[in-house]
Image 1: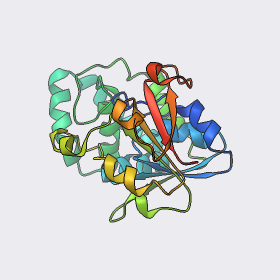
Image 2: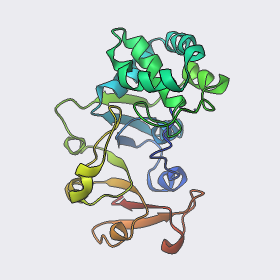
Image 3: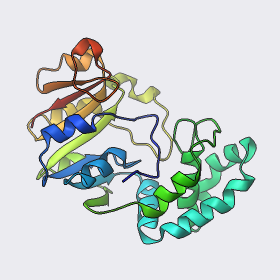
Image 4: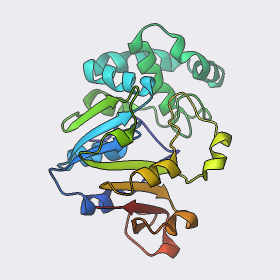
Length: 244
Protein backbone atom coordinates (compact mmCIF):
# COMPACT_ATOMS: atom_id res chain seq x y z
CA UNK A 1 0.00 0.00 0.00
CA UNK A 2 1.68 3.28 -1.10
CA UNK A 3 2.08 5.84 1.64
CA UNK A 4 0.70 9.37 1.05
CA UNK A 5 3.76 11.03 2.59
CA UNK A 6 7.08 11.44 0.81
CA UNK A 7 10.45 11.14 2.54
CA UNK A 8 12.96 12.05 -0.13
CA UNK A 9 15.45 13.35 2.45
CA UNK A 10 15.76 10.03 4.29
CA UNK A 11 14.59 7.42 1.79
CA UNK A 12 15.71 3.79 2.09
CA UNK A 13 15.71 0.93 -0.42
CA UNK A 14 16.33 -1.71 2.24
CA UNK A 15 12.89 -3.37 2.22
CA UNK A 16 13.83 -6.51 0.26
CA UNK A 17 16.92 -7.12 2.39
CA UNK A 18 14.99 -6.62 5.62
CA UNK A 19 12.33 -9.16 4.67
CA UNK A 20 15.11 -11.75 4.48
CA UNK A 21 16.14 -10.94 8.04
CA UNK A 22 12.69 -10.66 9.66
CA UNK A 23 10.20 -13.49 9.33
CA UNK A 24 6.53 -13.03 8.63
CA UNK A 25 4.50 -12.86 11.82
CA UNK A 26 7.20 -10.96 13.71
CA UNK A 27 6.38 -7.76 15.60
CA UNK A 28 8.59 -4.79 14.76
CA UNK A 29 9.19 -1.56 16.67
CA UNK A 30 10.03 0.96 13.94
CA UNK A 31 11.66 4.34 14.65
CA UNK A 32 11.37 7.16 13.76
CA UNK A 33 7.99 6.98 12.04
CA UNK A 34 7.38 9.77 9.53
CA UNK A 35 6.42 8.87 5.96
CA UNK A 36 5.47 5.29 6.80
CA UNK A 37 7.08 4.04 3.60
CA UNK A 38 9.21 1.17 4.91
CA UNK A 39 6.86 0.50 7.84
CA UNK A 40 3.87 0.24 5.51
CA UNK A 41 5.68 -2.18 3.21
CA UNK A 42 6.63 -4.36 6.15
CA UNK A 43 3.09 -4.34 7.54
CA UNK A 44 1.70 -5.26 4.12
CA UNK A 45 4.10 -8.19 3.88
CA UNK A 46 2.93 -10.05 6.97
CA UNK A 47 4.84 -8.30 9.74
CA UNK A 48 3.07 -6.34 12.50
CA UNK A 49 4.65 -2.90 12.83
CA UNK A 50 4.48 -0.41 15.68
CA UNK A 51 5.68 2.92 14.32
CA UNK A 52 7.09 5.15 17.06
CA UNK A 53 7.46 8.91 16.88
CA UNK A 54 8.37 11.61 19.39
CA UNK A 55 6.80 14.29 17.17
CA UNK A 56 3.21 15.14 17.98
CA UNK A 57 2.67 16.72 14.55
CA UNK A 58 3.55 13.42 12.88
CA UNK A 59 1.35 11.43 15.23
CA UNK A 60 -1.53 13.89 14.75
CA UNK A 61 -1.39 13.63 10.96
CA UNK A 62 -1.65 9.84 10.98
CA UNK A 63 -4.36 9.90 13.66
CA UNK A 64 -6.48 12.33 11.61
CA UNK A 65 -5.84 10.31 8.46
CA UNK A 66 -7.05 7.15 10.16
CA UNK A 67 -10.15 8.89 11.50
CA UNK A 68 -11.32 10.73 8.38
CA UNK A 69 -9.01 10.59 5.32
CA UNK A 70 -11.62 12.19 3.02
CA UNK A 71 -11.75 15.27 5.22
CA UNK A 72 -7.96 15.62 5.18
CA UNK A 73 -7.94 15.26 1.37
CA UNK A 74 -10.79 17.76 0.88
CA UNK A 75 -9.05 20.45 2.96
CA UNK A 76 -5.71 19.88 1.20
CA UNK A 77 -7.41 20.22 -2.20
CA UNK A 78 -9.08 23.46 -1.10
CA UNK A 79 -5.70 25.03 -0.22
CA UNK A 80 -3.87 23.86 -3.34
CA UNK A 81 -5.23 26.39 -5.90
CA UNK A 82 -3.93 29.32 -3.85
CA UNK A 83 -0.49 27.78 -3.35
CA UNK A 84 2.48 29.51 -4.98
CA UNK A 85 6.06 30.18 -3.92
CA UNK A 86 5.03 33.01 -1.59
CA UNK A 87 2.13 31.23 0.12
CA UNK A 88 4.23 28.05 0.32
CA UNK A 89 6.97 29.91 2.21
CA UNK A 90 4.39 31.46 4.55
CA UNK A 91 2.61 28.18 5.26
CA UNK A 92 5.90 26.42 6.04
CA UNK A 93 6.21 28.79 9.00
CA UNK A 94 2.55 29.09 10.05
CA UNK A 95 0.77 25.81 9.23
CA UNK A 96 0.89 24.53 12.79
CA UNK A 97 -0.81 27.69 14.15
CA UNK A 98 -4.18 26.60 12.73
CA UNK A 99 -6.52 25.47 15.52
CA UNK A 100 -8.24 22.62 13.67
CA UNK A 101 -6.13 19.41 13.74
CA UNK A 102 -7.61 18.34 10.39
CA UNK A 103 -6.48 21.62 8.81
CA UNK A 104 -3.00 21.12 10.29
CA UNK A 105 -2.96 17.56 8.98
CA UNK A 106 -4.12 18.63 5.51
CA UNK A 107 -1.36 21.25 5.39
CA UNK A 108 1.15 18.67 6.64
CA UNK A 109 0.26 16.54 3.62
CA UNK A 110 0.10 19.44 1.16
CA UNK A 111 3.45 20.95 2.18
CA UNK A 112 5.13 17.56 2.21
CA UNK A 113 3.93 16.85 -1.31
CA UNK A 114 4.89 20.32 -2.55
CA UNK A 115 8.39 20.32 -1.07
CA UNK A 116 11.17 19.15 -3.35
CA UNK A 117 12.69 17.16 -0.47
CA UNK A 118 9.44 15.89 1.01
CA UNK A 119 9.58 17.88 4.23
CA UNK A 120 6.88 20.05 5.77
CA UNK A 121 8.76 23.01 7.23
CA UNK A 122 11.49 23.30 4.62
CA UNK A 123 12.34 22.58 1.01
CA UNK A 124 11.81 24.36 -2.31
CA UNK A 125 8.36 24.76 -3.91
CA UNK A 126 7.60 21.94 -6.37
CA UNK A 127 4.05 20.67 -7.01
CA UNK A 128 4.84 17.62 -9.16
CA UNK A 129 4.11 15.22 -6.27
CA UNK A 130 0.70 16.71 -5.45
CA UNK A 131 -1.61 14.90 -7.86
CA UNK A 132 -4.57 12.53 -8.12
CA UNK A 133 -2.36 9.55 -7.23
CA UNK A 134 -1.21 11.21 -4.02
CA UNK A 135 -4.80 12.00 -3.05
CA UNK A 136 -5.80 8.41 -3.82
CA UNK A 137 -3.03 7.13 -1.56
CA UNK A 138 -4.21 9.55 1.13
CA UNK A 139 -7.82 8.37 0.99
CA UNK A 140 -7.09 4.65 0.76
CA UNK A 141 -4.11 4.12 3.07
CA UNK A 142 -4.35 0.75 4.81
CA UNK A 143 -3.63 0.51 8.54
CA UNK A 144 -3.76 -3.30 8.70
CA UNK A 145 -0.87 -4.62 10.82
CA UNK A 146 0.27 -1.06 11.55
CA UNK A 147 -0.06 0.88 14.79
CA UNK A 148 1.41 4.34 15.44
CA UNK A 149 2.60 5.27 18.91
CA UNK A 150 3.50 8.67 20.35
CA UNK A 151 6.53 8.13 22.57
CA UNK A 152 5.90 11.08 24.94
CA UNK A 153 8.36 10.58 27.83
CA UNK A 154 9.69 7.23 26.58
CA UNK A 155 12.47 6.37 24.16
CA UNK A 156 12.71 3.64 21.56
CA UNK A 157 15.18 1.75 23.79
CA UNK A 158 12.38 1.33 26.35
CA UNK A 159 10.71 -1.16 23.98
CA UNK A 160 12.64 -4.42 24.03
CA UNK A 161 10.12 -7.22 23.48
CA UNK A 162 10.28 -7.16 19.69
CA UNK A 163 12.70 -6.53 16.84
CA UNK A 164 13.70 -2.87 16.67
CA UNK A 165 14.32 -1.12 13.34
CA UNK A 166 15.92 2.32 13.33
CA UNK A 167 16.04 4.19 10.02
CA UNK A 168 19.02 6.33 10.98
CA UNK A 169 19.78 7.90 7.59
CA UNK A 170 23.02 9.81 7.10
CA UNK A 171 25.56 9.03 9.80
CA UNK A 172 26.73 11.99 11.86
CA UNK A 173 29.36 11.82 14.56
CA UNK A 174 27.96 12.92 17.92
CA UNK A 175 29.87 16.20 17.96
CA UNK A 176 28.25 17.20 14.66
CA UNK A 177 24.63 16.72 15.76
CA UNK A 178 24.30 20.31 16.93
CA UNK A 179 25.04 21.52 13.40
CA UNK A 180 22.04 19.74 11.94
CA UNK A 181 18.98 21.96 11.49
CA UNK A 182 15.76 19.96 11.73
CA UNK A 183 12.16 20.87 11.01
CA UNK A 184 9.25 20.45 13.38
CA UNK A 185 8.35 17.15 11.67
CA UNK A 186 11.83 15.63 11.95
CA UNK A 187 13.50 13.58 14.68
CA UNK A 188 16.93 14.06 16.16
CA UNK A 189 18.36 10.53 16.16
CA UNK A 190 21.09 9.91 18.74
CA UNK A 191 22.94 7.50 16.50
CA UNK A 192 25.98 6.66 18.64
CA UNK A 193 23.77 6.32 21.71
CA UNK A 194 21.47 3.86 19.94
CA UNK A 195 24.41 1.90 18.53
CA UNK A 196 25.59 1.32 22.09
CA UNK A 197 22.19 0.71 23.71
CA UNK A 198 20.83 -1.69 21.06
CA UNK A 199 23.89 -3.86 20.67
CA UNK A 200 22.42 -6.67 22.80
CA UNK A 201 18.93 -6.43 21.27
CA UNK A 202 17.34 -7.97 18.20
CA UNK A 203 17.64 -4.93 15.99
CA UNK A 204 18.44 -3.47 12.58
CA UNK A 205 19.94 -0.02 12.13
CA UNK A 206 19.77 1.36 8.59
CA UNK A 207 22.32 3.99 7.55
CA UNK A 208 23.40 5.64 4.36
CA UNK A 209 26.72 4.03 3.65
CA UNK A 210 29.55 5.52 5.70
CA UNK A 211 33.03 3.98 6.13
CA UNK A 212 32.99 4.67 9.87
CA UNK A 213 29.81 2.61 10.27
CA UNK A 214 31.26 -0.24 8.23
CA UNK A 215 34.05 -0.54 10.82
CA UNK A 216 31.61 -1.26 13.65
CA UNK A 217 32.36 -4.81 14.83
CA UNK A 218 29.47 -5.11 17.29
CA UNK A 219 26.93 -5.89 14.57
CA UNK A 220 26.61 -8.01 11.46
CA UNK A 221 26.83 -5.99 8.24
CA UNK A 222 24.62 -6.05 5.17
CA UNK A 223 25.42 -3.77 2.24
CA UNK A 224 22.66 -2.49 -0.07
CA UNK A 225 23.10 -0.96 -3.52
CA UNK A 226 21.05 1.84 -5.08
CA UNK A 227 18.47 -0.68 -6.36
CA UNK A 228 17.91 -2.33 -2.98
CA UNK A 229 20.00 -5.41 -3.74
CA UNK A 230 22.59 -6.85 -1.39
CA UNK A 231 26.07 -6.06 -2.65
CA UNK A 232 29.70 -5.61 -1.69
CA UNK A 233 30.95 -2.70 0.38
CA UNK A 234 32.52 -0.88 -2.56
CA UNK A 235 29.12 -0.64 -4.30
CA UNK A 236 27.01 0.09 -1.22
CA UNK A 237 24.62 3.02 -0.92
CA UNK A 238 23.23 1.84 2.40
CA UNK A 239 24.42 -0.37 5.23
CA UNK A 240 22.32 -2.37 7.68
CA UNK A 241 23.87 -3.18 11.04
CA UNK A 242 21.92 -5.96 12.67
CA UNK A 243 21.75 -8.58 15.43
CA UNK A 244 19.00 -10.87 14.13
